Image (cartoon, rainbow, N blue to C red; front, side, top):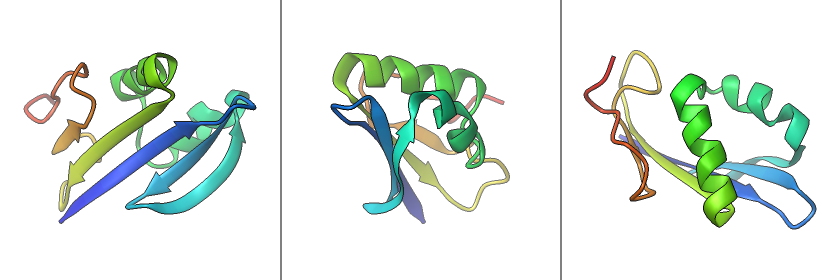
Length: 89
């Protein structure tokens, strides 16, 4: 099963978090974004990649293949500039 996550930056510098097109959180302030994404397993290099994508285009998209034991395994960014972490531990 594939799951697509999107983080979208709004004009007011808040963020929306979506999973498979369903809004999970709206208007998350920048100061809370790291904590909010951490609840879903986005941390370390993934969070750094998300911030870079948000700065470049205002949107970050990731596709996960489940089942997996941790969210970053089976991960494939839908941003062509992001590294492919499917084979990393």
